[in-house]
Length: 199
Image 1 (tube, rainbow, N blue to C red):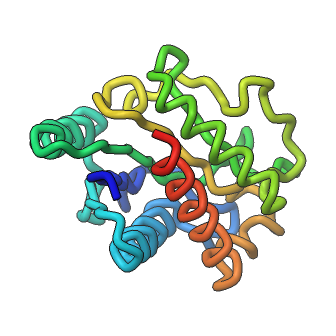
Image 2 (spheres, rainbow, N blue to C red; image 1 turned 180 degrees about the vertical axis):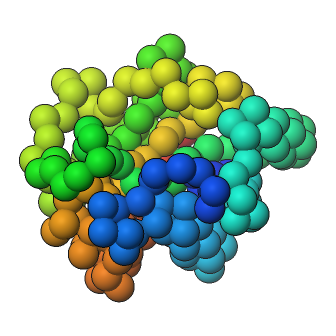
């Protein structure tokens, strides 16, 4: 197996305003860190090296997130590693109330690398197969183009993953359930494993 490292970035922090379901049941920073830890543990269990970019509960600035990721990438690249940056988030509809939007989405910087785009397409194809795409129309390129800071300024291939909507009551139940977390974790594992085989 080629040398490969996944850099896992848990978005936001406990003091970030908003970033929660309207009923307060889902706190995005907490959910993101739980999923990041689950992914870290599972990847290492199956023999894929992983690293948590953020371990604090408090927010870490976008600049510091990228600085950490780029420093780790530089060190591991010198050792012959391929790296992938995965930023963990939960989506939200407009306003502060409930909405009907549902489904996962994968975001790639609009001028990102071909490997970033490949990873975005793999994640989206697997989301379709696992019936995770919800009621949103998927862009023809196979991922959502973005200008997100962490996707733009991370030097290795990078994606940002939105794990359904915290403003949809049914989605919140799914996100907080053991079954939902296990399914989303498996989505990551399937996608990262496929990406590793294709690079």
